[in-house]
Amino acid sequence: MDIGVYRPGELSEADRAAWTAMQSKAHLHGSPELANPFLSPEFTLAVGRHRRGVRIAVVRQDGEPVAFFPHQRSAAGVGRAVGLGVSDAQGLVHRPGFTWDARALLRACSLSVWEFDHLVEGQGPFQARATGSFASPVMDVDQGYDTYLSDLRARSPKFTRTTLAKDRKLGRDAGEVRYVHDERDPAALRTLMGWKSAQYRRTGRSDRFAHEWISQLAQHLFHTRSEPFAGILSVLYAGGKPVAAHFGLRTQRVLACWFPAYDPAFSKYSPGLILHLRMAEAAAAGGIAYLDLGRGQKEYKDSLKTRELSVSEGWVTRRHPVALGHRVRRAPVRALRNTVVARPELFERADSLLKQVGKIRSVADITTKK
Image 1: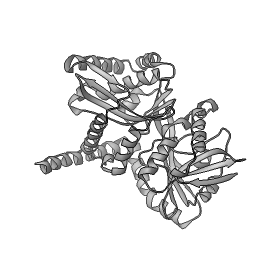
Image 2 (image 1 turned 45 degrees about the horizontal axis):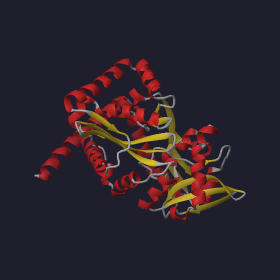
Image 3 (image 1 turned 180 degrees about the vertical axis):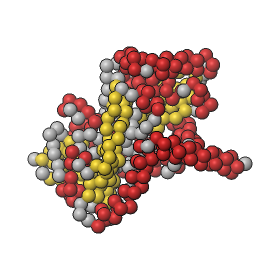
Image 4 (image 1 turned 90 degrees about the horizontal axis):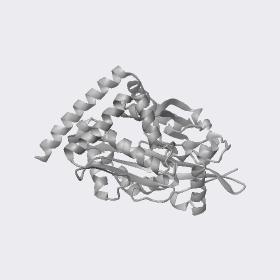
């Protein structure tokens, strides 16, 4: 077995094709999680254009690629999942039956540690070092939208009835409701990013789009289109005006939900929920098997999901002082965050505090603009 490590620009077209082929056939080999867009070569190469240290380890047997391990590496040898913080699926993309030694892989990549927070299932050598696992809800539409909606009605009749009624009321009050599954107008993406930034600030969260590289990455992926991968901007219009939007990534079988937001002026109509149902309908018509809503406890995810995947977080380490130092620094922060999220009484207090901070921010923003 031979392991070569490449910069994004050094990856050959043949290797990219082999990587994509592994993803496209993953569901046939019992590993559908490997088809996630965040595990695609396009996502890794896009991050590589906006972040330093992106590398791809290519594992070969008899000269043929059998696995791809995308990662980011610091000068000190600290490794992270590609796009850690914005990536909702991480791991090694491989042929069926392939096994590996995690520490040997790190050694070949000159890494003392590799950190992940959305490791997909089926990554045994990495999962052995996981410190926790978390639910990632999905909406299954492989049997068609009508089947999904019928199941949703059976599971949550009141929720389904109310959401569909709000869809009709939105049309009566605001004008014709129109849905565009793959909107190509960059202005619509800017509108979505503006809504999302305002939501982050309003709720006291860190504004991801305030980080230039994340903003540039989203715009880059918006313009990335091929048969096996594309950035998809979906927009819900009412009376010709955008009221909700979502930007995500798709492969041939998976639509990864990423950045949803809506105009707060239309909040009483629950436009985000209406949008997700329209997305599910269009995705099913386009041959998508499921929408991955991503890790995180949200009421809307619980209402829309059909089942849950599992993603893990943790570290794979070698015996190295850099690895020890990294864990000592990162572990307490991660443990505190997970404790707060897992305990409703703590989460509610923390969420309330963040919203108070958000109100202070909003007042400060208004004052600054004046």
